[in-house]
Image (cartoon, rainbow, N blue to C red; front, side):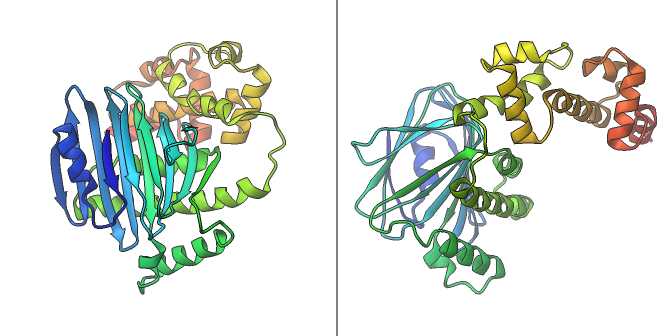
Length: 335
């Protein structure tokens, strides 16, 4: 268990480094710990884009449950978290029930003084979590375009939330935010270039979370899939990529993910805008392009690797997706 106090000036990453006996690096308003021992494996990093907006990244697996107690301050910062992979548990105070924050789920938290937060990161769960922390008091003092825009949007969107006690919003399962959060979670560079590479992803991640928050409060999606069921469906892509050489059927996927075929189709359509069959085919084509870009495999070998038996159908589909026949694309990558 680690006890921390909510304070922009606190060196929480350094405290975590000591807790995990981990390597600690810092510089340019950023810090990171890298750990590979019997307590955890992976990295945790923190960096500031500008005063009032900072980012935390967890790309780590804990060997035992890791519990963080966070004492809250009067500054009332906003926390925008997104689980690219894994899940964790969150609660306010000592007496409230824990809530489970699922994979591919947004969570927005606004703290309150005289209160606390407890977070439990479960053991043996691969975590990729991006957390954006916004301090509106600091944003108000900046004459920076992005700072002004963020401050205006947050003040407008959250103007009706309570100010006397903490606020938490668990969003719907949201694949769009995941595109940007995944980029953020891969960054453990603490130098200037590392910060610049992810700045756009951070701002886009925040924008989609704000949009999702507004939609969650007014939109009825019109289908009966729980957040847990949608969260399961977001693991579909990883499973397909890991088993591309196999001929996977919707019936088999339905059984594996413990969802009816109808729910599986509806969920994939909602999250990715296409049928299960087209989603799988797009994953195969994406992996084929990746293999052409990163290996010396020929067209026949790539076709086999992505689980397609007909090279002519593979060539036709690849050209439709990328505008070039695989043979032409192969030559282009080796020239």
